[in-house]
Length: 106
Image 1 (cartoon, rainbow, N blue to C red):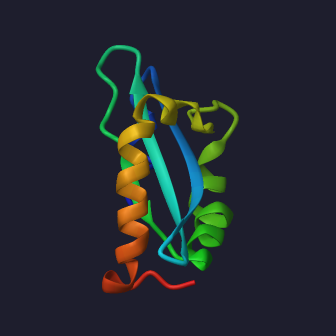
Image 2 (image 1 turned 120 degrees about the vertical axis):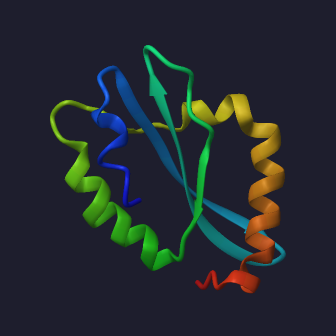
Image 3 (image 1 turned 180 degrees about the horizontal axis):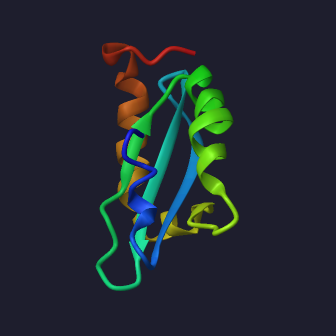
């Protein structure tokens, strides 16, 4: 998230994101999923970030709250997920299930 403050700084940009909790293999893993849309350029690839439950609280309380601001360049809105749902279901279930290998903890 180090660069998140720079992404929506480009004129015509809007960062959509959503927090999801995915259950896989008996584990629940939270994710931050986002996409940068720009009026003049193509949409960015999806950003998929596995988090801990504490990580979600920290992101909401610090990074994202600081960036929402009155200009509305960062928006919690998961409607962009609809066009990627078939792929996301597979990616998120697999990542949540394998999370123990890279340190996701409840």
